[in-house]
Length: 264
Image 1 (cartoon, rainbow, N blue to C red):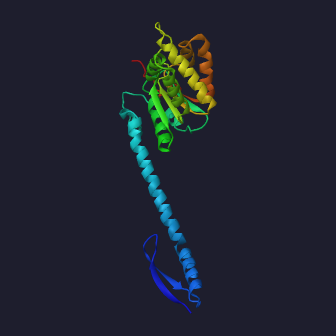
Image 2: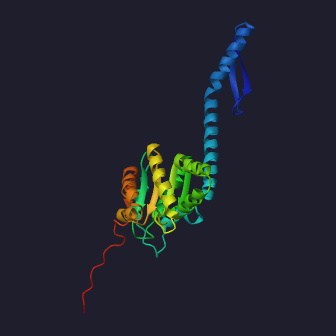
Image 3: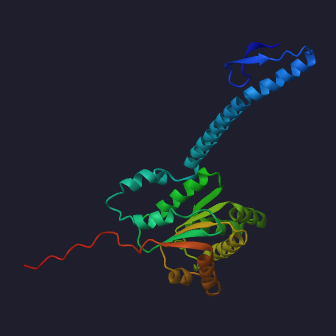
């Protein structure tokens, strides 16, 4: 014989009607009842657990999004919306931006280069970084001028500080340096020497550790090489080519050609 019992679900709270086992043996009936409850509520538990995991993931994503505002300069925080209606004063290379956004995190980084300014190199870089940030990767971002200034300052401080800074830049998931070559490597007072040494060693370390870099640069390869010392210029350029996918923002025409007007 058996009868039914209605109890609230321990996971969702909804009332569930179960058939109460009645074998005549108290211990056996209790065991069968627990097994029955477990089977009935198993799917409910999975649904509630999945919903909780989804909610927690959404909360973590929101937390990452809030932290993005601390990492990204205010000018580039609305890059997605800006690309839809860019300023008429800037001739954005949308084809190059789309190509850049195809980049996936891996062993190779990406170099966004071109001598023209205002084509969207830095905008594309921050769009790439936002995707990586929201996926949970640690990003360190700075301009080349800031990099040079910090390297020069640490050269005058203790070796311990220099090692700690280099370790952070070497171990972060993605390193972004904007306007590579903007700050001079070779100066009369020698302040660029430390930056050159730091940068050369840094690219070596990240290549060895298979950690990608994101660079933007307004110089071509030969100009960048010429701005460095003779013994590092060519090796550094070779490492850039080996460790980064290259996207040229000067390669695509920005505007359709207009038909020539006949002279009067």
